[in-house]
Amino acid sequence: MHEFPSEAWLAEYVDRINSSPAYREAAATWEGDVALVVEAEPDKGVAEDVWMWFDLWHGDCRAARIVPPEEGGRARFVVRAPYSRWKEVIRKELEPVKGMMQGKLRLKGDLPAIVRHVKAARELVNLAGTVPTDFPDEAA
Image 1 (cartoon, rainbow, N blue to C red):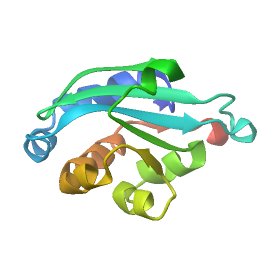
Image 2 (cartoon, rainbow, N blue to C red):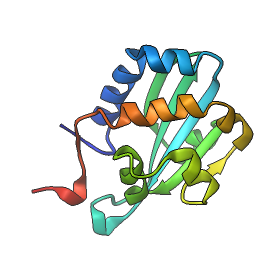
Image 3 (cartoon, one colour):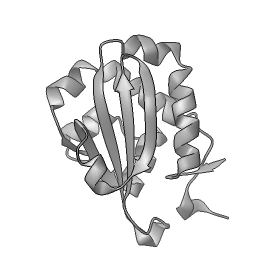
Image 4 (cartoon, rainbow, N blue to C red):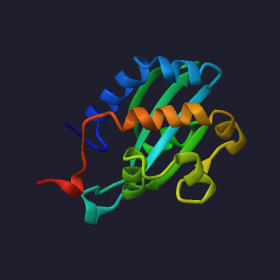
């Protein structure tokens, strides 16, 4: 099990992305880096914002790491939400593109480009849900 958000969780997620034929096919025309910002919720065990940066290129995740905000903010796409909202996404309780359109996930970047690649976004969510995850607010 890997605590979300953490480097260990991120590494396992990248392994799953890169071993997924479904993602490779769905994201064959995707180009661009993405930063996901897990906003702090100290009462839920996430004391500060966590910026996860991904270099996604034609169905591959060429690199991913936790980065400082100034680095993550330069990504082509930045998606922000509180920790508890990301937890809903990982558990497939919230579809991310729908969440962006509803303002539950905030996007900096070109929403039409995301919408054109909705199948790739769904595959990323499906893969996130396969990572054995410990959530800090559910610690025993």
